[in-house]
Amino acid sequence: MAYGEDAATVHAWAALGGRDELAEAVSYEGAGGVLPARLPVRELARASVGVCSLAAAELLARRNAVPVPAVRVREAAVATAFTSERHLRIDGRAPTPFAPLSGFWRASDGWVRTHANYPHHRSRLLDAVDVGETGDDRALAEVFAARIATRPARWIQETVYAAGGLAVAVADPSPAALPLVETRLAAGSGPRVLPPASLPACGTRVLDLTRVIAGPVATRTLALLGADVLRLDPPGIPEDADSHADTGMGKRSALLDLSAPEGRRVLEDLLGSADVVVTGYRPGSLDRYGLAPDALLSRRPGLVVAQLCAWGWSGPWAGRRGFDSLVQAASGIAAVESAADGRPGVLPAQALDHATGYLLAAAVLRALSDRQLTGGGRLLRLSLAGTASWLLHGIRPVPAEGGAYDPRPWLAETASPYGALRHALPPVAYDGAPGTWSRPPTRWGGDRPVWAG
Image 1 (cartoon, rainbow, N blue to C red):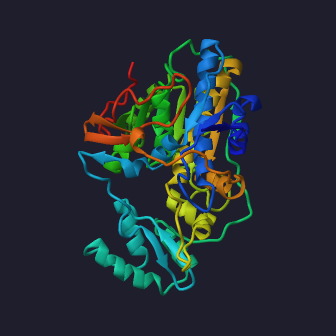
Image 2: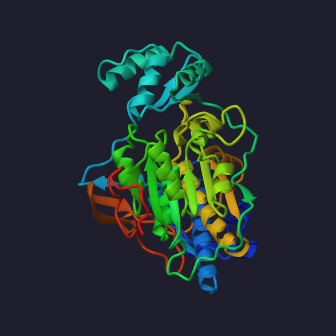
Image 3: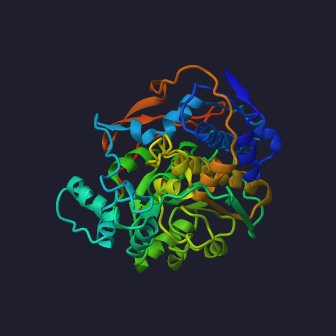
């Protein structure tokens, strides 16, 4: 069963600057009550994929001077993609789940949520609460829990933050609403017309300076749609191999030391012919490398600069590190989803990450589409907190349609340098959309920092 005229889709499309009449043409094929939660996660997920699909269809139509292809999104594909890391298998092996020290912990006056999947975050977390790093993590977790239970949640939050670690107090929802997308037009050259092509982003070059899930999902989607995506990471801070196997589809990955003169020279060469730069680091953290938005747009008129952060672009938390699980806890989502015994709950997927990733890709595609007509550069800003605010305050639940959900049609097997991958297929859907990526992920950091052609 298909249905359209979805209010969340219309709202997101308007936030992206799209024409109203196009959003009304998006339709969805239901798969029952997928992504079940108290909050409207299914509606969030399908709307974010819906506007991404529509933005791709719009750009393709503008390049080829044809009508916009029909967009029909399947909720089964969306649900599978939003839990892609859970479906991933590498030579039959399931990915590593959250580390033992990542999770909810009872404090003396409430709950805190920690994130310790990366070794440096684990070390800082333990140091902050005076727990030695020796021993098995599961044994350490008992000592850690006992120490946390004696301290107030806010004290833990601020003490761990001061030590460079990751912990937040679980909070009730705030009435304040953050913007879903912030867009700024920058001066530049006239229209930059992309020639006719079979894929919307074919011929565009995207520098990907993102990590973990949301940013890599966005650039993975742009790669699906034909972009030459080159991910750059600093040496010495490895990405989780399982995460990269999932989100590295269609892209290449290189290491580049931007603190070294040679690294900055290579970066400038890459920027000289880039169409899009996507960043996923804390506000201001890349500015010293010449990657501040105004500096980029000044050197490269017509560039699309798309920025992603955890907590929003202003306010006291803007410069803090954050992940989906932490934003769920601090925004009030964990409280809304709490169990009967009061233990905080979680969404049925890393939904803030995945939704923000598709919204970010949609914003880039829309910027490229508008650049066809008006020229100029664009600054796009999204945040996990902005997506959380939309989920909490801006989306109304709608009845589920369709029958039982089966993820199997939306999974595929692909050979890769990591081994045989079982992975989720992309949910982006318009008439003629590619069914999967043109290439598997390469090894993290295993490519040269050059454009493909």
